[in-house]
Amino acid sequence: MTKPTRPVAAIRMWGYAECVEEIEVGVSSVAAPIRIGNSGGSFNIRATGPIRRFNATHRKKIGRRLIEMSGKVAAAIRLHNDRQLA
Image 1 (cartoon, rainbow, N blue to C red):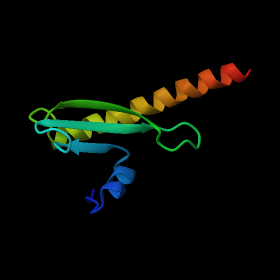
Image 2 (image 1 turned 120 degrees about the vertical axis):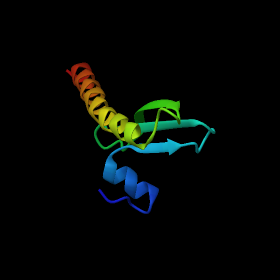
Image 3 (image 1 turned 90 degrees about the vertical axis):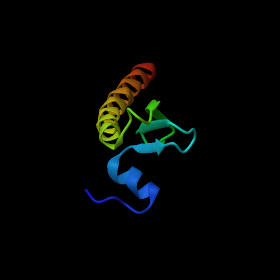
Image 4 (image 1 turned 60 degrees about the vertical axis):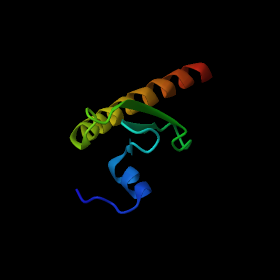
């Protein structure tokens, strides 16, 4: 997979965002949006940890897992909303 030159393009292509020491030195995080209808990405699920453990390979694994989890969370929220409307 080629690496996009713009951060937003990378997020769209990979389906998750990475933060590598951008907020705090030594800390890295990965986040995936929870998409519900047309709400965009107003919710997310994330993992945060020390940069020494959250290397590029591990962030990629976490990103893929967070995408799976965000899909499950979105489905549960939609199911709950559907039951509320019934």
